[in-house]
Image (cartoon, rainbow, N blue to C red; front, side, top):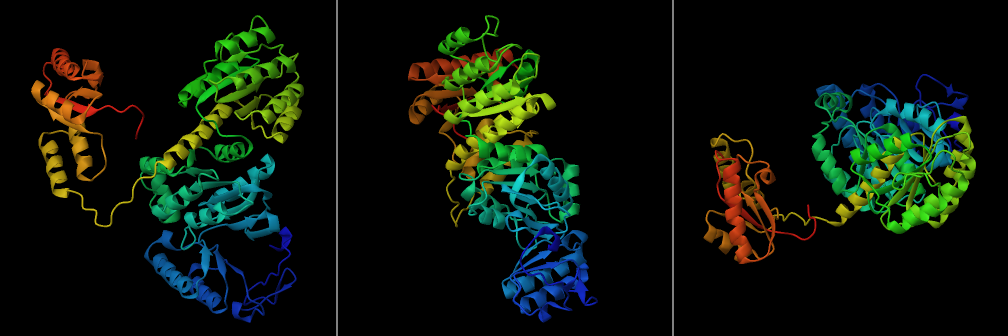
Length: 557
């Protein structure tokens, strides 16, 4: 704290010392002459409950508990945790920790941690459950010139948890994005509520460890909390508007990119490159991550023909060739960005003999200032492209060393767009007197198991959802042509019909699905066609009828 340039008053507490680093020390918190805003405790675990109680009596507002040896070590630690929690409630204090590094607030030069570096000032709020990871990220961030509004090691979360900090940073005018390293979650409902409240205005980006069962077990031994099922976390994050990433690099690159650029409206990317190989790599990565190569309009192709070499690729990726200069790059970026089929543009440059990395960067920066679409760059190389990278970054264009990283960033940015769309689809509140039809659910499951099956039919699965009042589209099971017609008339057109059989999992493979049925005659023909085709292709299948359901015109989840 003293070495970081903090200009507030610091009171060392040590019963065995009269001074620490030339600053007068006190034997206990009760002897300090002024009211203390923040107490930092770094003593053996067994001594902590009494110190926390003394802090409460002295009117301390907040505590950072660096010490370890609480919930994560078993019953003895749980008892200490209970005693600390009681004191916090009694005096209305808040606590970060235990088992944490502390926190840093660069704007006021406060390093309330045992990290040996001060974080650079910036607009990213970082929350980590791992203290040791914090020191590594802090070291990395200084080298990468990544700055923070707040840098918090949250530890085992006796009191202050993720949702408290999201609430605080969400309202902080000096924070533009929130990035989180998470191992476990103790209060999922509060976390998701806080995230939903702020995700529209500030990106929340999470690196969630413990994906594997082994990783989850390691997280539990580290934090003392269950890591949870990873599929559940994935679904919950999407529902709350959170972007989930896989690496530490991505955690901060995505935060910076979302702060620099507009998020893409869709996943269609135009790739502009002066080398074929990087364009192919970018394309492969884009498809692998679920994106699409934008199909350039005929007008765009015609205009590119006027400005590029006759030997350019004539499509997307737009290979402007190795001798392309600033003029060719500028027209290619400008025309692709104007194309209605394009949601974002990736500009790739490799330093070849005739390449002007800085000149190209300046032209791209000029277009980006006038463009509302996402523009990312990959300036590949080292010394030759360094000045060009600086030009791009100073003009709010994210720059990546490799095309793969740039494409992944684009897709994460699109994930944010898509998750915000999901966020608007707020599910209705569960009524207080919610009573699922458990007896019927149990009977249905027992019948499936008695049939020696582990997978329900679609009709059975939707019955089960209905028993828990989860809305599904109108449907029914027909055992005859007459029943199919009655169901069709009752549900209304257009319809979908599907074969109903526990033995046929891939219905389309046997001709067991017909879409867009719009009248009684089509329904009659569809019923008979599905049964005939399914029996011909799987004569031994247990066919239980034809599933009739409403066909929706747009996508729902």
